[in-house]
Length: 283
Image 1 (cartoon, rainbow, N blue to C red):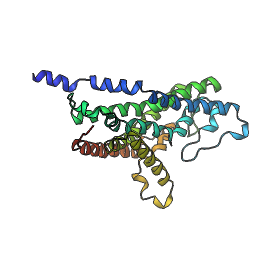
Image 2 (image 1 turned 120 degrees about the vertical axis):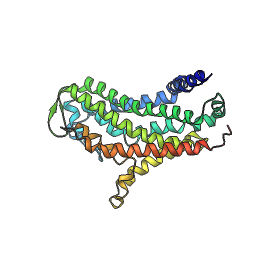
Image 3 (image 1 turned 90 degrees about the horizontal axis):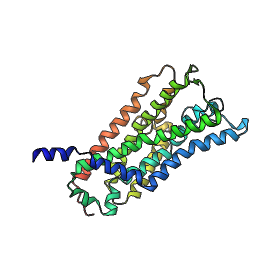
Image 4 (image 1 turned 90 degrees about the vertical axis):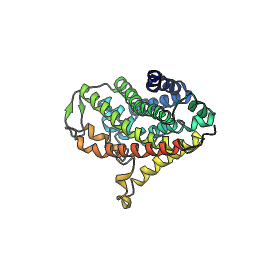
């Protein structure tokens, strides 16, 4: 009997079921399609734009638009930079807000807990699904940008932000590093969303709350008078992904963002557990 219990405890069927559920939802599919469409729109716009209307920075991060015409590689980076301030956070907010609140809203949360699925295991599986989405979203944007950029502008050696040149293959590895770094940042955002999802039975409420918190964090980060607060803001170091496009890469410059993300993950996962463990499940 003890062996059977151990196998059930480590079974991956619940996680596989959660991943399938996330993958087949039309709104998630539409969200990924929207994320992939933005770099295509950027590439087409840059292709048809007049020369004097290109090369404008986006503010708050490195300017990749000015290099798109000479190398389609930078469409992916421009797409990531544009979507990082709104579209990527909204995608994670939708996924995280629905994690627990969605089950409660549909009346399936009590059923899941009587299968039996322990509350800790339920939170772990829900968060695992969020983590997968957090890493997949920037990869989708980058992949779409690379394909659109190569098709419309071609490729070639990549000029780093330091002014040196690296091969296209090395550039792709740097781009993968950017996606992984942003995946960690969005994973921290997902931890906050999971906590918010345990507070309500309305997934849209949790989604809106997380989106507003993200926007507020970006806004507060732009106010010089609040510089004492900036190191504690979740989004403060998101734009540091540009450090991966320098030569050589300074890993120490990425540490503040990774440490901040790690702190948010630990704090808000503990808060989600504390809230959900003692919650009276009514639906």
